Amino acid sequence: MSHAARDAIERAFRCLQQRDRDGLLGCFAPDALLFDPHYPQPLMRGTAEIAEGIDWGLKGVKRFGFTVVNYFGSEDGTSCCVECDTNHTLAVGGDLHFPQVFIVETRGGLISRLQAYEPYGPNGIGGAFLGFERLKRRLAGKRAHTGFAQVGG
Image 1 (cartoon, rainbow, N blue to C red):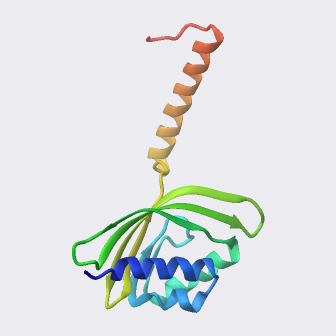
Image 2 (image 1 turned 180 degrees about the horizontal axis):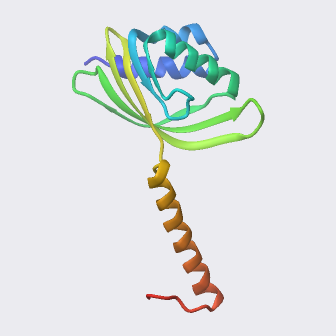
Image 3 (image 1 turned 60 degrees about the vertical axis):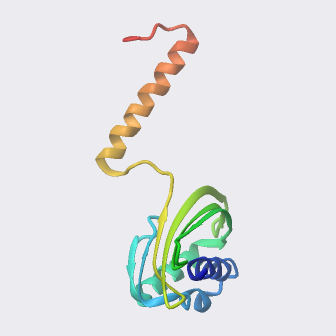
């Protein structure tokens, strides 16, 4: 069984952790799509845009860390899903620790699509409403603990 997708993403993680820009860029097909909401341009098409994203990431992050928690591969091995425990150190100081999932598709041993998913709520107006609702629930919980009666019980 082929493990092209797993090999490609593991190689990409290694290159990023070693800060090997050219090696990382070489993991992608020329027409690859990369989507990661952490980047200023979340959708990057082709190696020129992906290179700009890599350059931006290397400037902002001092140390990249990816620990694979789970790996789920397609039957033919050309696609996979990788769950990671992500640990980065920012260039300006401070550590980032969060879970992350990557969907990987390959063609000819190179990544043709890489999409990152993070466990963050929605942004925009949907995120504002969700944030307001969570705040209401937290405040309601605090009232219960401070002796205030809850309304609408």
